[in-house]
Amino acid sequence: MPRVVRGALIQATLCEPATSPLEKIKRAMIDKNVDMLEQAAAQGAQVACLQELFYGPYFCAEQDAKWYGLAESVPEGPTIKLMQGLAKKLRMVLVVPVFEEDLPGVYYNTAAVIDADGSYLGKFRKMHLPHCEPGFWEKFYFRPGNLGYPVFDTQVGKIGVYLCYDRHFPEGARCLGLNGAEIVFNPSATVAGLSEYLWKIEQPAHAVANQYFVGALNRPGVEEPWCIGEFYGQSYFCDPRGQILAEASRDQDEIVVVDMDLDLIREVRKTWQFFRDRRPETYGKTVEL
Image (cartoon, rainbow, N blue to C red):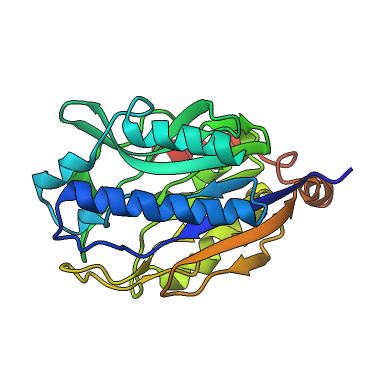
């Protein structure tokens, strides 16, 4: 019997000005995303992913300590607790990217994974951090991840997470495949002119090289007052052959819903035996240099 999983990507514009009080921004974005998750559930989604730092603007466009006020503990914080209840209610696996406070003054760019029964399965902390123009000052806010590349055994399948800038590094994408991932979600916040030409190259390439499904999620719109560029949306799912299955628009709220037949992974791997034909004993220079 085919193992078909219906997945959803929640692409959402900022609904409260970034100049508003932090709690007002956070509350508005959480409410908006909860509503969109309920819409996804009504369309039969069994697993859904929210965008990077989903409950606020992409505040890394500036270096200002006030944004530390958005951070909370994972999984003890209120947002993850709320999402655990929602996952149980909707019977849906959730990937929830938040600003994590590990200790006072120690922060991570993190995605929590919650199973369809509401249980917290664990988290991925963003491994690779940009710190560059036109406004991606992530090392001001976050420490590099220290939890490796976990894969979470959920009720719908084995799920891995990569976060935005991580997608430029194929080593971690390979680790997720070797760790058994069947679907890898990559919540992102990236702008036109910087990476748009790579958006539909890198992640289908990861899907092909590692023979899993990828859900690539980017926020849409221009966020003031920084205006570092257009977050160009175009969230999509692709299959283990690198074929795009469904794609969102570039500038508006959208829920991308697609059916993924996880049995296709085995079929593709019978043809392309990349894991069998690997030569890890020859790759030492990749970590020595």
